[in-house]
Amino acid sequence: MKLCMIGTGYVGLVSGVCFSDLGNDVICVDKDNNKINNLKNGKIPIYEPGLEELVRKNIQNKRLNFSTNLKESIRKSDLIFICVGTPTKKNSKSADLSQVYSVGKEISKSINKFKIIITKSTVPLTTGDKLEKIISKKVNKKLFSVVSNPEFLREGEAIRDFIYPDRVVVGSNEEKSKKILRNLYSPLISKGAKYVSTNRRAAELIKYASNAFLATKITFINEIANLCEKTGIDVEDISIAIGLDKRIGSRFLRAGPAYGGSCFPKDTKAIVSTADKFKSNLSVIKTVIKSNQNRSDLLLKRLLSKIKKINNKNVSFLGVTFKANTDDMRDSSSLKLIPFLSKKGAKIKYYDPTGSKKEFNNLKNVEYSNSIQSCIADSDLIIVHTEWNDFKSINFRKLSKNKKLIIYDMRNIFSAEKINKLGIKYFGIGR
Ligand code: UDX
Image 1 (tube, rainbow, N blue to C red):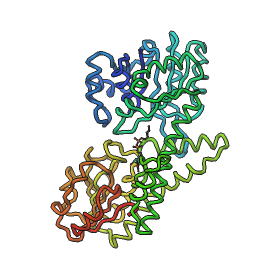
Image 2: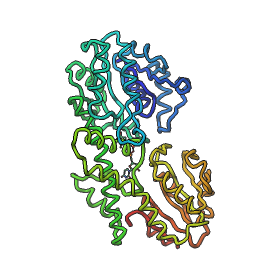
Image 3: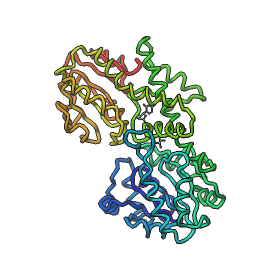
Image 4: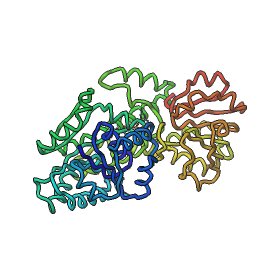
């Protein structure tokens, strides 16, 4: 099939490349000329393992193209995927849909034959209805169908999550577009992916409900971890034991610093904002948002209770991204932790496998180290913030001579017992 992906961020680029790898002709469109020129030369703007090779392969077999010409790309395609950003509005909980609606207006000027317009970006409940209204101002209702097909791609695992999804969700109110979408996804269905075909509004809500539930699950175990810290229990024992109950499941049950990223914080706020508009109170998710926002302060309070004087102490951060296998800093808890400690007079060094971060450039006493060794050599306190595999085999005794070294393992990637045996003070999360 002929596909047009509007927007070449995590969602548009990954989905576009993967669709081309399934044998479709795909044009990825972006208004950013520079980005499109780089993509044409196989230069990828995002950190996503395996993406570069997949782009090169599909450019070579001429199934993947890039363009800045939206009108022409829409005319050439049968399925138009809207993959533009839907960030949280400033000083609000709701999603900013300005890009979605302006793309909708553009599409309505370029419909020369039956098109299916698919919202792939996470869009609030009823967005498809509004898009339909915008387009039908200019185009006969028979000439298009607006469909919801939310993505469930995790950063760092996006290609795998596309090729081997737990389920594909398609929401449409018309039979014709239901059939075409099922056909598009038939290669994944034949490999075992479950396929959920429902109405458009249900598909929009499924995405939010899914992310909000995962955020709730993480916040649940984070709060259980707080109780464990007060009662000498290791939260890992709790996670493992309750996760063995198939009704709970073991994934997304790892205690850590506050959840971050471009989705959970945004989507939990957006679903609450939508529900409030419909006079429906999502009190559990409101509590999750508040609990997660307070989490960094809680971790800092615990840290300061363990380290009497932080002023002038050498503090090292291992990892600063919101999770491993991404370079994304959006809503990473390090964005709260590092400025706070720098204000308290700590001398901070940080190392991350994806390099230095502009977010810390203007902070006093905060510098980037380009190796683990140089980051922790003269450390008084090492904070393990992100669970990069690079950190799991560090030989702390070899790299640090400090007899009074303390390790604050915010991802519980180390064994407390082993670290203590090295004569190093250790504390983790929920243990
Ligand atoms: C998420 C959803 O998983 C994905 O389906 C959706 O399409 C986009 O949003 P992503 O934001 O990339 O994906 O990251 P994810 O792997 O879900 O982690 C989100 C946050 O939760 C991270 O800060 C991570 O560190 C944290 N997390 C995750 C935990 O603290 N504990 C866990 O057990 C899992």
